[in-house]
Amino acid sequence: MFFERWKDVQLGVVGQSGITTIVNAANAQVKGIESDVSWLVVEDLELRASGSYVNARTTQNFCELSLQTQVITHDCADPTAPAGTPLPVTPRFKLNGTARYKFNVADYASYFQGTVIHQASSTSYLNLAENDETGNLPHFTTFDFALGTGMGNWHLEAYIENAFDKEGQLSRNSECASVNCYTNYRVYPIKPQNFGVKFGEKF
Image (cartoon, rainbow, N blue to C red):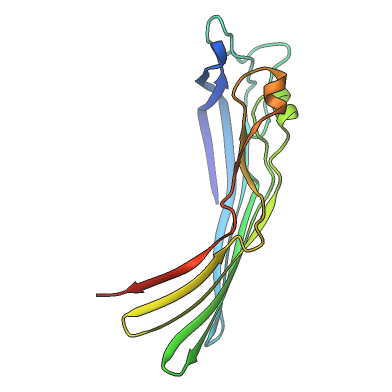
């Protein structure tokens, strides 16, 4: 379990001439829990799982950056992000689980492994109006698989990551501050489907 009071959270906002400016947006509070567990079901089958829950929110208002003074204030009638707003790009849940089955083929120590990874949705921006334009980052789930074998000091593995080519998103960004820019945002995706073969040897 963890608890943190975060003073003057740094945030990138669009400043003068569309140039991104790093500012101290607001104070925040972060609390959560993370854990991992492993279980040897039988001698040749191991299950592993880990996950985290994070609740990260501002504890004071965030008012619009003044393009003239480049100053952030926290006392205004209509804050762009009132106290209690979730911090952007901070999913509440992250979970992953792995099953690994070991077996022998003649004298070759072999295994098959499957992994599932899940990430919950999150906001894109601290500014509520900007986030309404870009929308929240959707949750996603990916699957990885690997088949390996080896003997002595060497091993060989065939793998596929993001096996079903899930189009997950890690963040969204805009190149300027106009409404048109926010509705035509850029997406930073997760790694697409990737497969290959790895060979290793210990010396």
